[in-house]
Length: 91
Picture 1 (cartoon, rainbow, N blue to C red):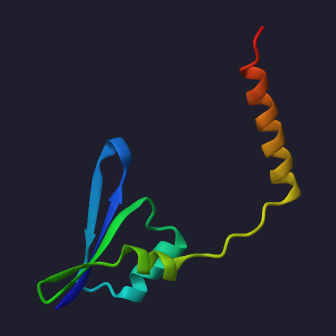
Picture 2 (cartoon, rainbow, N blue to C red; picture 1 turned 45 degrees about the horizontal axis):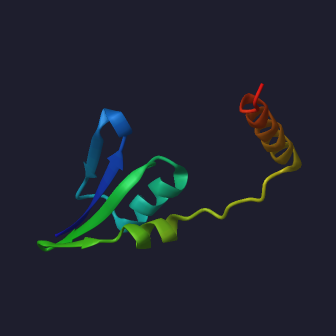
């Protein structure tokens, strides 16, 4: 029997292990890519009593290509940085 354990970290609220023997590797990847699973601590594959840490493999397969920042996001980032500098200037 093969199944996957996905450990999700909620910070102060604790952790949750999602274990469903009917979920496939492909389904785990699709849930990560869709954003259903976030803040993943680790992913283990249990196969006939053997445990394997496959976190890096699954996250690499589920990786969504990052889009470059738009000009509006760059401008907002610049304004945020300027505001932070003003907050910390010596008066």
